[in-house]
Length: 603
Image (cartoon, rainbow, N blue to C red):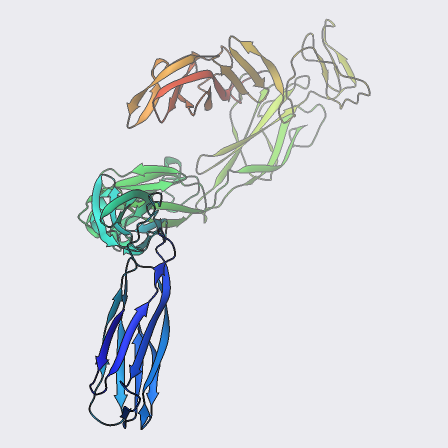
């Protein structure tokens, strides 16, 4: 208890007491009451002729202790103030103000402090576990670190570790702290984002209680990318040889040549220009001597991506759209091929072959043209005779000398445009029409035409069969879209031939067992024992190198297989993955597609 007096003869006596205590010994919270008492007069006959009132303020709360009037005599009174809080000690700030209506007694101030004991947190109370206001941020942009402290007396030290660089963010942190990652970390982050470990170390009364980590993804600042100005690249057209002389962008024939001007690129934060590149269709070409070329543009509105990359790997890109003239290969429609007389009049036993066809081609703003030609050969012959120039839509004889009426022929119409693209149509012209013919010697027969071949039954008419049709030999495509004429196995290969000349074959290795992957270059790993392995193609299936070969690996992990080089005789392949170690290769599959004959070859 504390007390004081104010004035003399008689004095005003003021006293203060409290019953404040903690809720429990291991609780940081306390509560109780502060009581202020006052009295006036030492004897019943003591009076004070002045009016006055007494105010008491405790921790910002003001109450009236006494309001005295003229001639009042001896008095006493008490007032109470509830107190609660959550600190290690309590200081109660108290002021007493006497306000007389006259006289000169003045005001009284006094302070009061009570001790409620020292709070010792339980030993099991955990250290603070930090969280962030955002999972990622850019250098130069702030993020709030929340300590989530379990005790208001906790203090924290915040540090960071980012790609090998460490530093202190702040010390003596209470509840939260806003950290702005400095741009000086720019050499430690990538455009894809770099994890930064933020450690929150908790202290109580100067003693460490533990540390916990939260991860923050850091990105470069917005202004870290190389800055480019107008004209930092130019785009020029390069047409393939077939389109040379046509001064237009043409779909399927034009490439884009991009030239870069390094003087119009400003790298940021002390970096330098590392290189330029251009991307189209998923393929990226690095610039050589500040120039890069795309592959052939295959759309009427082609978007190429031009890129400059700095020494930190940060890139600035722009999309550049190129408008191209549409293009399609020429076609032949309204085709008519028949036997005729010399005046091109249809005739069953005519000794002339007459053909007609309408040509269609892409004009390319009047810069393209097309030419139609016709030729013929006897069925079974290996090659056609000389081409005859034709005019679209107008019949013309394709032979200058008479042909036999007992032989069948194949007429070829071919349209070629100024770009060198050609479309070919072939149609058989049968012999003269007869109901039935038996070849001399009786070894061949035909319905609807003359029998031309030994041991062959030829039918020019449609066939309607109500029963099953069984074919023991091979089937020629004729006018069918395409059919399989041969299939089988050759060694470890299974193959299939189509009447059109297309062939395909597939192969599998069988188990290669466990192999150790060793680094080849640039972080790519390969199975060293089968690197550049080769498998021979089956004989007679491909007349030239297959146009498409794919490989696939069946393994116990994530590994890839690819066909690396293909010839008419063999396929080279490789199994690889992006990390080292052991892998079990259960099988390698290879699928190839090519041709077993050219379109002009006989069957």
